[in-house]
Image 1 (tube, rainbow, N blue to C red):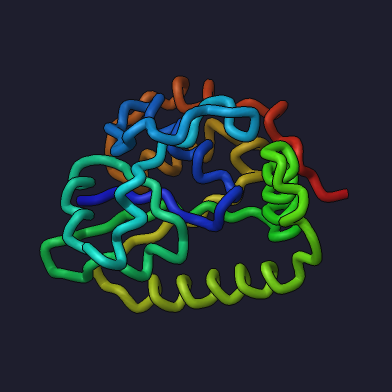
Image 2 (cartoon, rainbow, N blue to C red):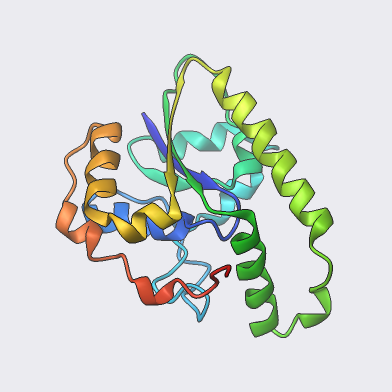
Length: 189
């Protein structure tokens, strides 16, 4: 069994990873990307996962653990009968995702990369459609979609639902303790 947290960048994947880590699920992370202003509790990423399209076999290192895999890389998961995946797919309104990404670029001094987001928004929409079609066609993949706003409103209920979906005992109170509404800074009016 391999547990994956996925979604578009800036959709709440780090928050879900933090919740699962606090809940007691072993995390596959190398600590290479450090906590910062955009993610003060950390990213919990594994840099090697970016090589998944070239080396699908590396997913074997995630057996019995949870690993973050951005939505587009999910398409590279090996569908070998030996693998069973449970994917917690984070969802957040695209305007908030784009605003959060713009704010992150601005803080990093890359304001020149910020501009008309319509092309990026179209690409993200197409990515999500493609990934959802792919996920629906795979018999060894189970998916739970979690909305970022719902975590903020009902952290305990969401934590319980995630634990039930993953079929592992998790420390629900510790998971809830990771949810910090003050970090929800990129709201759309």
